[in-house]
Length: 379
Image (cartoon, rainbow, N blue to C red; front, side, top):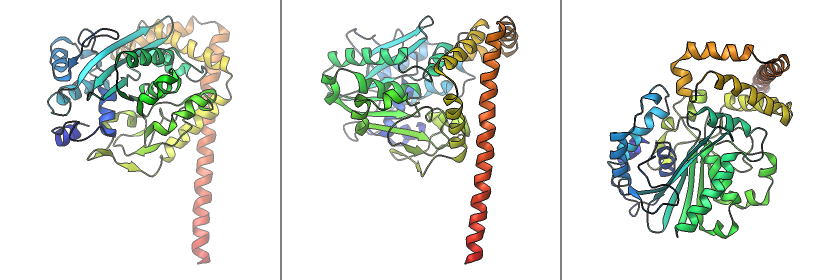
């Protein structure tokens, strides 16, 4: 993305229309904390990206995310985008950022105006708050999580106040929220949604995938997954996706700064890696064997331990490893016998299913090798 800004940042949106790389840049820019900088949702006014970047640099403290590979790069992306003709005049508005521990809701979004006729709504993915990660895991047993409900309310409010076409974008959970909002907002707004971009965001429960509303927007949806996708392969998408080349390894391919770009498009790959497919098989087999109640109990127990450490963010867990580990061990020790047993059995089941998938994969490799040699002998 940084290379793209250097090589194509001199072209305004009127000279070169919105493309898939722009989608990713807006999806990542919305991770920045624009509180106190960008007018909030429902408030009049906007601020140019170049001005927002200047205030951000002067007022925001980002030391807490310096050890988190993806998040620490985002302020620099904002700074570099603000120097380009393409992005510096883009107007930002309708910012919202909600983190609610009681309802397990983490939701943030804002609007980018790229022309009189087009606005981009960017939904933030999971930040480093523990609440955000808990909500992600709740997707494994809930048809609708709190941030998905919020995405509908937010999108309708924005579309009532801004008269234009819209492009909905997001990375990680943000991509999921964009697709969800497009599916279930009031149908009177549907014609104003031009495109939807989901960048390695998780899928949905079968009830959503099979709904008329979800299937009605698939033609507008663009789903991109890195070749070793793990997050984006969780649950189901119900539509086609395109695979992007990445310089990252395994889970680190979720980091969009490692996605490879040529010109104004992502470099494509033919399919997902074997490792990604094997991890996906493991997770799906594991989830299938757990009832919704067991999944819920596992998530609640896991996050009870994490939150008893006193940490509210991944950065806090990361920066005080020994202190946090001691607190979590104590929290686990105070759990009742049944809760401990359920937690341990659920984790054991995951590794058991992983072993099965690995053994099956090795067997398939051996069989494919034998068949290949057999064909050579026949020739």
